[in-house]
Image 1 (spheres, helix red, strand yellow):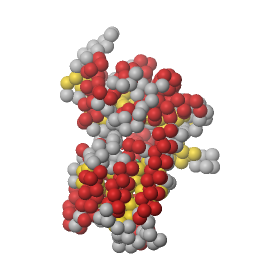
Image 2 (cartoon, helix red, strand yellow):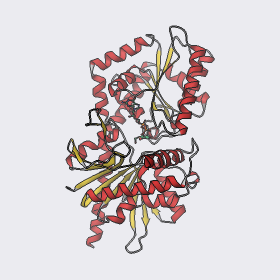
Image 3 (tube, helix red, strand yellow):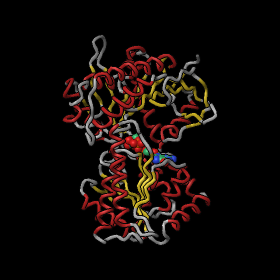
Image 4 (cartoon, protein in one colour):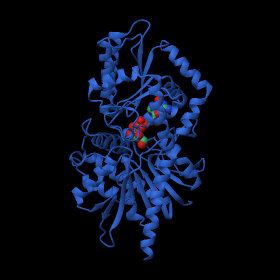
Length: 472
Ligand code: GDG
């Protein structure tokens, strides 16, 4: 097998089955971000093909070598649904839902991480670079370093890293940090996440940290310095603007508006159906505004796209029931035969339809209780080529660090959320324009290409440093 200079390791391969036995690119920010880089570098991508017990040989897809990792049905349940999505996900999102700590889940997590590390070790060229993605694979960096000390290893963490008071609940808190410290560069969404990580390392191992560097002593060599730093992820902003410029997408946006009752205001939420996204808080605030007569169902509609997610995990089944009950109550109390308060869509849509929705929406509600970044906020800004619309943005989403011209809100404070919604609805065109222009500039200037470039540059700089040290 040919060896790759650049290897990405992620839980999922960047492709889905196309229904006819072939493959198609799965839509997603990471895939668009890395595709050009991978093609240039003749890279390889190690990941799970998304179906249990599927044994596949590596294959080439659009210039990238795909290396499938097989997971049994049991491992999908224990490693993915269990440890990744029912232990790490809730713990790292500040225990919005209670994390469950089960030893059999952990054992599967270790086993599966080792399989990913071995697959990456087998495909990476001598002295190559490996970039590990996200919380499902936190042990891979150290496992890979043990096997292949010649590699330069990066890890990017897409979700928050919690404060030590919460992190310390994890029965395997030392093992997970050791896993991550196997990387040369550990990237986070926010400066605060990198800070929480460095503090956890200091508390548990007493290693010294200086600026973004963590000194990791080695038993048989001089200390290594691991760079732990924020690299806020972004979107392919220009491609969203391009879609928004298409006449048929603009026509579709007009159609959506007139279908919802014409001149009224449209509020929009777009999320995976996840308890971190604050969907219930948003619906509660909107429902109260209707109850109090401050909003009228004939003048305002809330469109909530809640795309299906993790449907076999208990907490997600419960959340779905709660949200659907709340939506039905609000609609039951306020709908008329001609108007619906909340259009709730438990479905996924093509990207063109999402952009048409962004263009149709007067107010975009991003009320996450905790979110690594939140790409929806950036997509809304990138799509508003007309410089109109208002972004309401939770201060607990990573995007709040960059998007200062959004209306910031604490989604736990329902009264504040209500006031912010009213303010957004009433905002003049001039103020919308001023804010949206600033938001768009920020997103266009810091797109996903800039993100992957800055991360890979940081990795290359580490490599140059360690080669320099070797020569001395
Ligand atoms: C994790 C972190 C971080 C949703 N419904 C549809 C659809 N989507 C797309 C959105 C957006 C993406 O899914 C969701 O991205 P988010 O960033 O909002 O959230 P997570 O899925 O939780 O992602 C997050 C991210 O990783 C990247 O690092 O920002 O904090 O949790 O792109 O548009 N897309 C389409 N149809 C849908 O129905 N086409």
